[in-house]
Amino acid sequence: MILQIVALILGLAMVIGGANALVDGASSLARRWGVNEFVIGMLIVGFGTSLPELVVSVTGALTRNSDIAIGNVVGSNIFNTLLILGISAMIVPVEITRSNRFRDLPVTILVTFLVAFLGMNGGLSRAEGWILIVLFICYIIYGFKFGKEEESGEGEAGKLYTGWMASVLILGGLACLVLGGRLFVNSAEQIARLLGVSDKFIAVTILAMGTSLPELVTSIVALSKNHSQMALGNILGSNVFNLLLILGVSAAIWPMSFAKIDIYDISVLILSIVLVWTGIYTGKKNVLDRFDAGIMLTLFVAYMVKMFIAL
Image 1 (tube, rainbow, N blue to C red):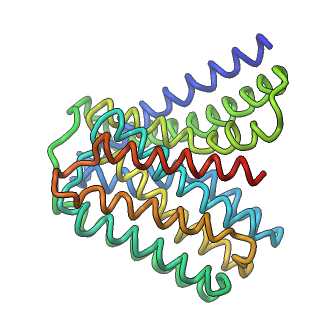
Image 2: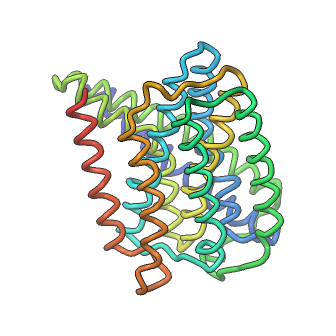
């Protein structure tokens, strides 16, 4: 038990240290490139923290197991939006800029509806997979093209690292996030089993939420340093990465059927991102505040209870 506890603490320390390095490196890179922090959070932080999901889904596609790939993406996006964004907004209200309102959120919603529509109409063919990949490439170009339009002026100035050093911090931070997150989850699972916790509870809690630990800690660290746009970009970028690139590559490898995906899961996926949209159109502010966070976290708890009952 002592070794598992030490591993648990070490894993958490690696995740926190990695998140700090990633945020500092990404912030420095944004300043050097003259790109706003939302775009850096979306294109670098969000995509980087979603790489483990890419490996899992591609592996599922190579073994012709579309359930793994689709379930991984749907579950990850629900966790990102309801749990991670919900906790983030509960800690510190998340700023919503004009570009977020009229460009970034609508793109995320359209991508979510597109994948849901394709999925509910039988699944994703190889051709549709390649279309998603092309849309992903356009999304990256689009992000860099318009990423210099708006600067929120937020965030700590911090130390301005060289481009080389910023890259080292980003890559090192991502490595610590992935390895530390895996160490944390594995040790937490071992401790739970030693304490006699059921496999059902472990699956619904530790294993399910553990995959979102890097995104969660990175968003919290970004918010603690007043980089709310980077935190939002991390979440929305991760969602788009999952839907376009991960599902696109997986479907290009092997056509994917949504036959075994519960309509309840798809509904919660759509509702989660719609909640973000409606949360900023309540006539009160340009932030996602604790009230919005409370709604998202309540829906997340309801979703988890449904999952637990269905096991």
